[in-house]
Image (cartoon, rainbow, N blue to C red; front, top):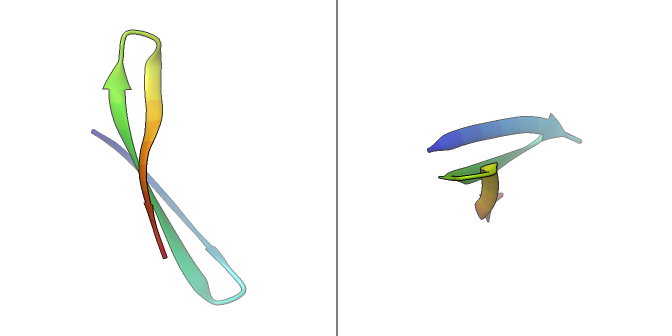
Length: 31
């Protein structure tokens, strides 16, 4: 799994990516 998160306007967005043959694709997004 690949994870990526960043803060925007004091909000933390967490993106979870699943690995695929072409890299990492967006799997889930939470606020």
